[in-house]
Length: 117
Image (cartoon, rainbow, N blue to C red; front, side):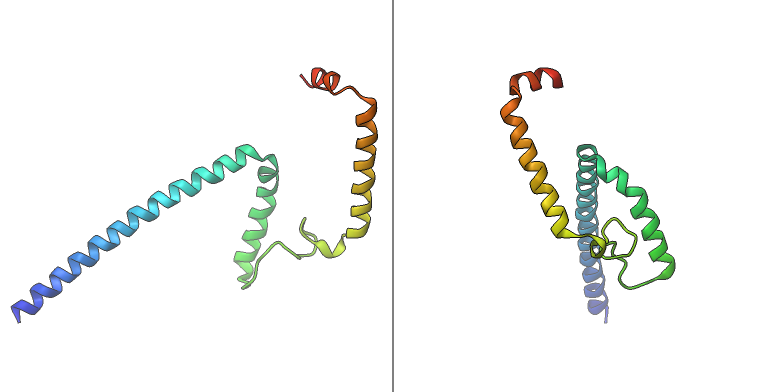
């Protein structure tokens, strides 16, 4: 009887050490992820611009408790691609690229670099 209890205590202590190790690992991963996100936010301005919209949308989803609360495909969201004419946008991109190529032949790149400074 005592031997069984000692074994149970030993197993519980081992399990506790495993959980503590797992907690430390998760804390390190959380810190790394937080730093990664902070770096991305510094690197890309659009993340800050979108964060307010995403926060409001996530809060609405939390209240509605819908199983699928993705911004993609939601009407009125910036990711509502059903309302976008992809063919027209491709054509516009092609026109802009052609215009840029035409300007490249007319403008001295060294002058552009001096203006940018």
